[in-house]
Length: 430
Image (tube, rainbow, N blue to C red; front, side):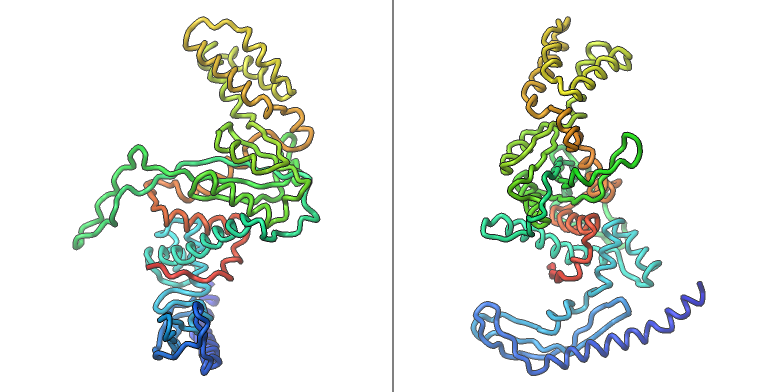
């Protein structure tokens, strides 16, 4: 271990010198090349030259940078910095990506500690936060642009020649505590920061998450337990239209939605899900089996009492009948019941209405035969991995922009698409 650290300390300056020489060579190759204005396409004029530096994984780098200005549009350009993808005085390059990776899985303070232990780089919590904002904004804009692109009927998605016969789409929402202060907390002298105000009612925002998977890729890992070979997660801090637009874009990007593909939508009965499901012409709507049983449990507890074995048997019988596709028989049996209390009568009528409304989405025997599945466990698991594990730790409150940017980065990691970040530019955040 000591030998490894000794070699690393010895060769880090040499690595910095080698990287600096490559940066200098790139800068020299751009000398004399006049850029054109992105707005008017006219040649720009060199305004001045300055030496700028930035932080890389092996240390500080610097370069002599020419700045150009368009006489007509007054736009400015620094081709070298644009080519290298760096910003003056800030963490850039692979170090920025590694810090963002740490922040995606751990809080910013812990990410800063890990950066020193794993990378040998000292950085503040705020330094990690700034990196996440810049890269997260880039990832979020890419996701939004992808949705806008595929929303255009003239756009081209991936080839659908090998589109699957069916794809399962499961979607749900999870609440996230948001910041309630209008301004940042300020420290006075050496005093500690004032505590965050409590999250009041209404100071929550919903994160909508969707999961895409192929029924043919479900495997039985153990008797009665199935897992999926791969899945794709889509999430956003937005409304129902936004999440379905992104789900559709991801389907087209994967080439999973052809003219003959059946889109299987699994939901918990929320109207916003079924209202947007109509965007898919060939679809199969499934009411989540476990949500259907939750409504039955509400009646069973009033009928037989809490912790009653009779309640267990009553719900178990309903579950067996629903799994066998006997939803009409279940409804008829519920209608023959004679409740003795007004509370039970109201709950029973609600259950009958709920099953009657969603009867067309409760052919569970057929769904099981086709391999579609009948539960929304995939999206419930996704909520825990995408949102709960990182965004809902003790005391965490989020700004809308901060949550949106970190969410975009976390999706890249969980979808095994982190390499995409190497091709995205860092966005300067004021």
